[in-house]
Length: 192
Image 1: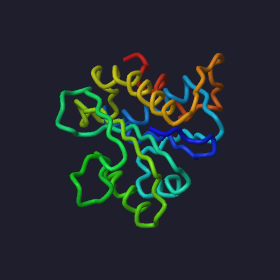
Image 2: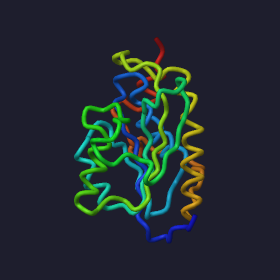
Image 3: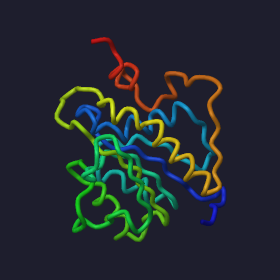
Image 4: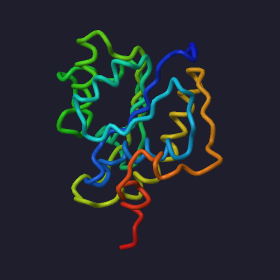
């Protein structure tokens, strides 16, 4: 696979709702990716949460996209599945994979219709176990897949010619993707 030039704009995106247990997988994974790694200036790391179609503007600016999301593939809970490029459903008529009200397919479809969809798409999905525990944490089989999902993203970035570097100094509170005690450490890891 050809590598990207350092000028390619790359978006690493996590989507989901942290208030519904495993639905928060994408957000928690991109949050941890940002906590662990520094990236070059041409790479943007974004918590897309449940913004739906508001994400189209971000997709328009990227030539390459990696998305973390909780996906109902019908697999065993916690199983990861990576799909690329044309395997990623772009149109709303395709089988709905995203668990969000406005599915990510609608976002891809809108960007595609505008002629501004990233040329290369990678979706790293994790099969959820529980989507009904309001305010609950990720379940163990899903939480255990955060690190492997990040490793997959790092391998994809390396294929694209992008080097990430492990942070030597922890992120300052002002540099976190999520604040106000909704970051993973404060929200999900708090004592019961």
